[in-house]
Image: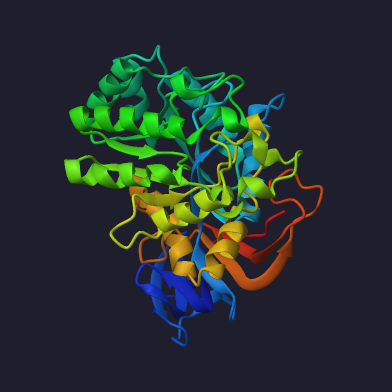
Amino acid sequence: MAEFDSVIRSRCVVTPEGSGPRAVGIRDGRIEAVAGYDTAMPARTVTDLGDTALLPGGVDVGTGVHRPGEDLAESYRAVGRAALRGGVTSVVASAAPARPAVDRVGALGAHRRAAAGTAVSVSFLGGVGADSGSLDLTDLLTAGVAALQCSLSDGGEPDLSALDDSALRKTMAELAAVDAVLLVHAEDSGELCSPPVGTGRPPRAERRGLERVLAAARMAGARTHVHPFTAAECAALLAAAGAVGVELTAQTCPHYLCLPAESLVRTSPAHACRPPLRSDANRAALWSALLDPAGPAVTTVGSGHLPAHGLYTLEWSLSALWTAARRRRLGLEDVVRWTAQGPADLLGLSDKGRIGVGADADLVAFDSARPVAVPAGDPSPYAGRELAGAVGPVWIAGHRVRPE
């Protein structure tokens, strides 16, 4: 057998087939073999993680990048550093809020140049606003955006305007023709109160928005992914989409699964969430929707990282999600399905989000038993909390990097 560039062994390697003791052989940045833990595999470097788990790197969909007042390239570098600390090896950058918003090919080029020095893999969402034309969408898809993104209210403000029903249907029809995915911030602008914070963003805004999305998708047939999804009372509406032939799924975030509104102090950054954190009863019901044995419509979990609104969640999302999942006696396989494999499958990123032959060697060591204390002064909603699970070494295209 030819020598591998590197081999990583762990007694808990999480693959699409399950978790167990395995050895992963890497050559030229890709996974070339997945074998038994004790299999002889000559390599230039060998790493034995022991009981520390080996996961595929996370794929974070809709990551906010732009930080107000900061150079765009530095914003990408900051996101890359936070991603590595959080076990994310691929970010799919949100089209907005961003300066410039990624709603034209020229703006996409500016973001690609700015992202060139990012420590992790970067893909992009293309933004659809009220003034977007058919040629703009075609150009963005041809230029290689992973999916398109829109909002029914202020999800992209101040850099991307909301769509009305006519524009939403038109966008969906164009995307259905090329089998592209549309991500929708589904809060309905007509149901938001003034000011649109806290109780000014009631669950009925999500319900009304979902009704609009479902009606448009039934007419156009587009693959649609709602993000973020928070109002568990709307889960039945999501689940019913499949019965009428609509491919409608959703993404939620760890803070909606972990932090009920009743637990927040007045100064918590989590008050900036759009939609807001909801009650403890809603949190429990959201978990039920995520774990629906009939086939959940909530299929992915993303960080919801959005510096433009003061939300810095990327670094702690994996540990926060694992903390809550472990309490429910769930396994790392579940977490990987929501944060890595599911997002990669949604966007057709076939080389990402899994440990298997032919996939990119983007890997994360994760000590699931190790407690992690979030500093009290951290800008995240998890400040001062103790979480479970520490991210260790990370490999990007087979090269070992240490989170800063």
